[in-house]
Figure 1 (cartoon, rainbow, N blue to C red):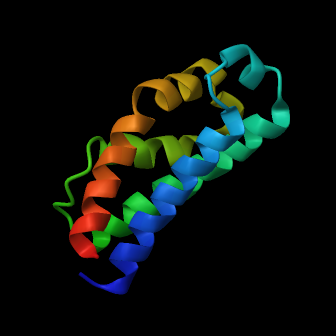
Figure 2 (cartoon, one colour):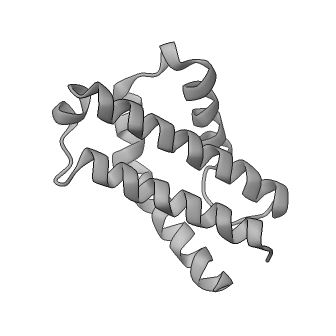
Length: 113
């Protein structure tokens, strides 16, 4: 694979780690919901993840990452429909889908290294 492929994977992983750092552990929805700065930082990292996934699909259309279309759609909604972004939906992605994405990306990075 080429350097753009690896760089995109690393951007996804870095953004996931930043989101985890911003929301803190243990996960606390109310802390997230009451902190606009954290919300905006998390949303920015979801934009980065969406762009990186889009780039990966351009390089390798069969990249084994779950829900690539949903990831890109989320990025588009945050970027272009920011007034429609619901905190509960973002939080659900953080809790329910980010761990899986992290695992998938870590596996792909190991295969490239």
